[in-house]
Length: 248
Ligand code: PGA
Image (cartoon, rainbow, N blue to C red; front, side):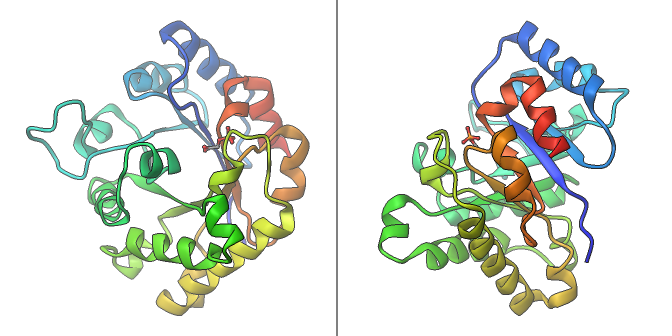
């Protein structure tokens, strides 16, 4: 089954307006078409990044959204807002949303459904903490997050959902999962998708790895059979290293 690779750069809460424009422009200039490249800037810079990447192969996504279409949710951003800007992707359930902002798996599942309802491609993040891993709970935690995240979806929406496996202990720590450790979890995720939705659908789902992906380790990670791309944090803030990961 051939799946087009997808490399996404999650800028988190970084960049100013000028920096966002410059970084997006540089990525757009260097972007090829063999890999789906997605930039995920802070919400307030989505318009400028969309503008800077308009005539390139680069897609743009948001780091988060609220499941409601509109209403009294001060500080939040809705699916219709993102769609009206021209965003194509939205990250749902990044570990920082789960662990720093206390978002539950059920709430994240609502976001994933709302993303589809608004024509956005959700990137559903799942991942265990170091404590979970050391207690032998990696698969249980990751697969629970997966099930809750996909709960509201029809089978037909599964291939259009991107999963990102991001072990919490590898995010921003410089400590990457080994290719074997990552592949093992990716295979469990795909096996669960096959159990629930059938092998044909599971074979079409793209599963990214995230957590300290750098130009130097990307090729080995992306060489694993069930790793279909990367969700890159720190290294996506430098255009040359983000592009080098895409090249790998
Ligand atoms: P990192 O972040 O590449 O800086 O570890 C990855 C992520 O949080 O998506």
